[in-house]
Image 1 (cartoon, helix red, strand yellow):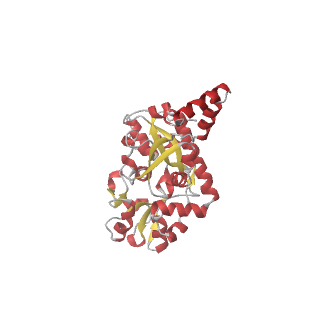
Image 2 (cartoon, one colour):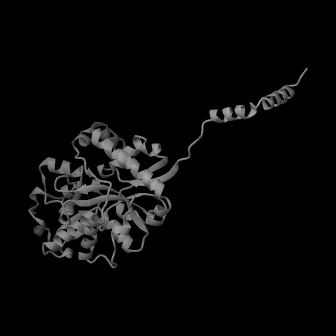
Length: 323
């Protein structure tokens, strides 16, 4: 009886003599699927509408399409994130004031992409007070307690600018750090006199009829104004330009989807934020803009200089990633 191994060897000799061996091997190689290795990225986000392009890009598979394996990591306080960039996070949510102060302290950071723009036509932030508080304008805030998400938050820097330009000393108010979700209860209980609030809390408070807005502090810096953006480590960005470009392409696809599919976008928002449907349906969508110009960043550099919160002269252009 002829052994199977001998038959195999015989067939190989025949195929080789006929010039078919390479064809058989090549055909077998083509039949095997080729696994494409995706670039892993850890990306921070805040579960609010400001960061919707990140959520949509993840949910709709745009990151995967562009060769990226993105893990989204929820966070609450963007002011503490700059030191984590390049370590725990590859991309992090940020605001101009947090970013500028981190760069001023010597951290190697760049703005990798824009995110939202604040304007009088589409604004997200309000300084809210109780209707019965007797506070009718910024001048009435003297000796009052104001809740802020962080003392270094963009809304608080903008409020300090507003006070200064109104001739009011910054130390005439007392600022306390309170997370956004807890602010409404603190205002209702009269533990604080005013809150630097954002959507969806702004909409809910104003709809009740018991509260009023003194205005949007952000717009005291500029209208329109750069409000939120993403940051990455400068050295890493230079070494990984194709990855950053692929990441930003995914965000661009997400923004296009948001603009064309508002209903499904709100469903995705609910998946990542657990906001009730009734709240999601009423929430205004921010104005998304992925591009950032030096002039937009210069606005906030000047604000922080006016508030004596910068120790160095910073040039904006080198701090922004350019494709």
